[in-house]
Length: 212
Image (spheres, one colour):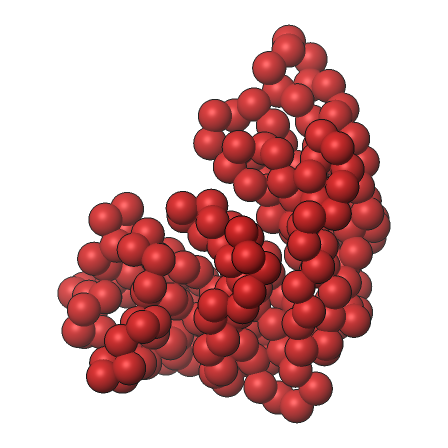
């Protein structure tokens, strides 16, 4: 993970329980500090779930018991310990405005959730259930559009705060492997194990095009 100004980078590797933060402003990268990468009990063969804030000052990491830590990198102080549903955290990310922390998690059943906490108050602001064994999520640049996906042959697109608008199912012929929003937030791209990319309208949930 690297900050937008390319001044700091977070590095973690498979099988390790440490996140290393490097300062990239010097000719040779300098180690700022090493922090515990709490990892996830469900995916010990994968790198742990971590996120680095764009200004390089905060690090988020998680464990397999439902604990998420938000750490001030310079002071090493824990700023926030939001509680998850306790089964496994697959992904952490900061929102585009850097004011929220986004988490893709599972509970002890087969249910997955996209959860968000406000970094100022620590309060949970989003809790969206969906079906995916290995959940991942992306928050749109408008702060209210949310994309969730996992091992199923569809992604789910929500419009948070608009209960009159139903969620859109963005369907593929194979498992959805990833997705992202366009910079202006009007389109979303998904890619799948069926070897296709699709671009969708965020407003209608209808596909614009399909690329092989």
